[in-house]
Length: 388
Image 1: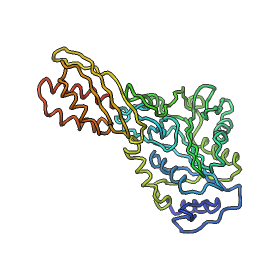
Image 2: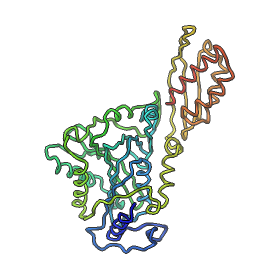
Image 3: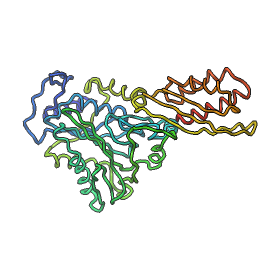
Image 4: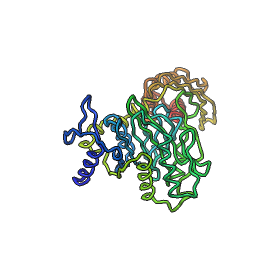
């Protein structure tokens, strides 16, 4: 961030009475100055626009604001976009929600946010809006009104409506926005997507299950037909959309905020945000926080050398992202029982992850040769394909 931009942000913070919470102290870390709360209610708000397109940095910025900013006397709107990514809700199962093998091939990251709700696909054609407020002032319908009224003002011919489920529909049937939120004792944030010109092929390809036969109490996503705003308003530009949203936010909440560009990776501005982003990137958070689940399926095996086919039965239980139990029932004319048991045992305790599982069974495969090695390899490949 340049010194000029920093100065503009600091002036805006002073006008809005931005407070940072550190225990019982309220301070701004870069200058160590204590800011007096603004008495001007019309300016007790802030609009921030992230310059980052990294999904983990932007999610970490949300968490940082929620954790450190006193929202009792002011509200904040954060606008952000990401490079291609899939984002799941806090209580969801990624293997049920998204096509992990396709994501790995395309280099598309998975992120688990701290709010609930369903799975969404992000790219630069999707805008994310996060409304921060005190828990007392939390009002999702009012937040969505900012979006619907802005769109109606821009394109009066479009039928734009918020639903009772806090989605936004276009022309009565196409979902253009989904919602999730997080509430704590004093603060809250509500974020929503807005499909402007997202890649529809990637969206439909990536938001499908990786693994068959999953049984889980994790929160499932609800599928809906979706559309981009540009499908029905092809001339709608990003600049006019952003400007309309900021204007409507000010109008709805009686504010006079202007949009401020920020870098969410700036540790001098957001101390500790890098650590928060690293936690969101970790396997332990992304996959390890998956609610306990089991997977039960049939494995079709074919030994082309002998033109022999059979079916094996696989049951796995997964807890904290680790294989807690594995049971393989394989016909004895395909593989001796002791070898299928060894495969099951070597997988227990491993991450439910194809790379780690493959490394675990590789050592076992080295102990066999000939027909047994070939059939063990085929069985292991079938198990790995289920893990996704």
